[in-house]
Length: 267
Image 1 (cartoon, rainbow, N blue to C red):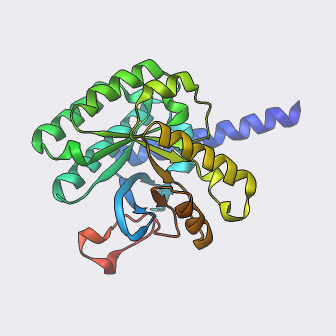
Image 2 (image 1 turned 180 degrees about the vertical axis):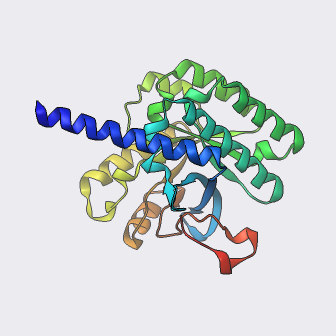
């Protein structure tokens, strides 16, 4: 019991520290997007689109990846503010680069958040082409919190040309009765099934089953966390549409279209 209490205290302290890091980053405007390519499986030199991943800077100037803080802020006001910042920065990037197609993450908890919708509406009004080039990613677990709300929200924005991706599919517990109603455009297969898949028969079976579901519902498939050439070959052979991972490019805060490769930096 004492060890459990000590663990809970340690986790609470960690979360409190991370919340403070995020709060300070927002206050001092030390929040940015890092961009990672999502490549066509059969033409891996061609990026189908990019994903804009939220990053914050800590007090030392170190870039903190989302996986280190997102769970701590997901249910707080800071989570909503980060969603707003990510959307605002993503829309600005799309407005600057007319040939860019970009995915931005959001939580289902931000649906109905007034400031988030204000930013989206303003971006669409400023540049009518933005909607057709914007993909909004919602994790499977987040979507399942309020499936009926997500469904109506998606239908409204899809009418404006915006596409939706279900992120981290397989990491949560999607009820198939809701899955039929969601009408996502893209299904992103969680990295736990992808890493080392070329030599893992169990993950091969799971991924093939997910690919079959995607095909049935006419969904574009993306494999996350592709880190090896043999995994990329296997995923291409079974018909996965796009691949994303360090094998094809790390997230960077200075992407190629900013035309200054000397300043490129991973994040």
